[in-house]
Length: 229
Ligand code: DX5
Ligand code: ZN
Image (cartoon, rainbow, N blue to C red; front, side):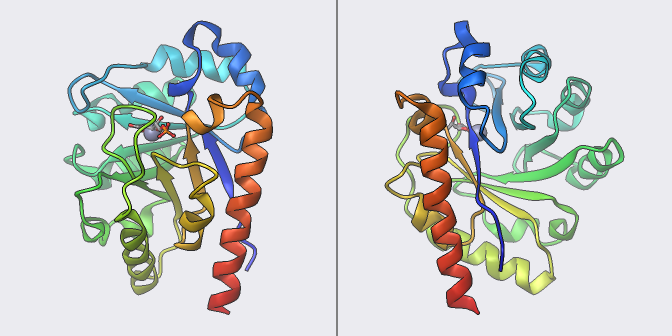
């Protein structure tokens, strides 16, 4: 019992020309989710380490850097230097995931692995005990505002079963298409960190939306924990 719901607004949906203002608007968030895209792993291009460093100077909320790049093992040091608190790399793109996770931990940065919608949870079996977080993509990465893929629920169930089987307890983050309409259901399937871009920044009061999403998610987590007890 006692798992806390955490909300990670994605600045992909912020106004890039008023980023400090938008970061101020979500100062009650648990993480700031920063989507690094290289125009190669994804068909979109966003931020590099300079943006991560600028965010670090602008907010006290921990930075959750989601690397959607083709060569994360080569460039991950840029984001460690820039002040990332947590970095997630795609299992599909990292050739040396164990080495990269070890590197992050040695540098005091929380380490996570990301799975695209078509990647089975089993690829993480051997690394799962080393991970601080698993990020399950509930859309194909690249853009905000996409529709949540319903098969994510069954995938979260499989991930929970795998975590139990290997005795691992990573945070489970879900990214893509999360809103007040589905966050409670997603939480019931074992997620505890929720990325939300368009739902938060599309709201006229982003801080209130963060709070609303967090309480809905918390009630999903509490229901799941009561059912399991
Ligand atoms: C998608 C990104 C997401 C995106 C989510 O590739 O990884 O973090 O910002 O946006 P919404 O919440 O609008 O689906
Ligand atoms: Zn993301």
